[in-house]
Length: 190
Image 1: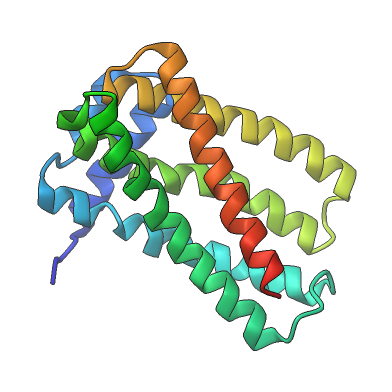
Image 2: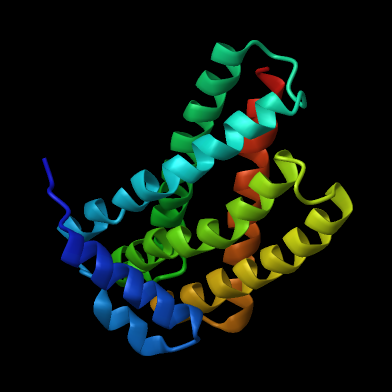
């Protein structure tokens, strides 16, 4: 079993932070290796507590009619699928685009960047679910954060894969569509 240390997490999150500041040198802070690839999925563990809090508040708000155990089970499966599906799709797509040598670097950066994305996006959703923010205010803020996150993913894609701006944009759209697809499937299971 891979052991992920606090210094490794700190270094990777700093690299993702540098990328968020549009600093390509942020890539130097990631462990770009097969082991680093697998360790980067620890980001899902870091994000999980915020996600669980969001799910609990969302359920408590009465927005979900499914039984609690079913809701949590479907969302847990959806969470895992979301973390695994995009890298699987990208494994094939990077071969097609002839940038497979950059695949590991990309997924490592993408996964660690997910911590920052969720650190900004999930609290807004939590505040909406808790009734602290109105749906209208939350939606406006949420859309602004979503646009920033999509740009961040685009920058990481362009930087790590060394692809054109339009190719990076297409990959971001694929990522977004896969997320919508998985979420739609999860909703249909409830």
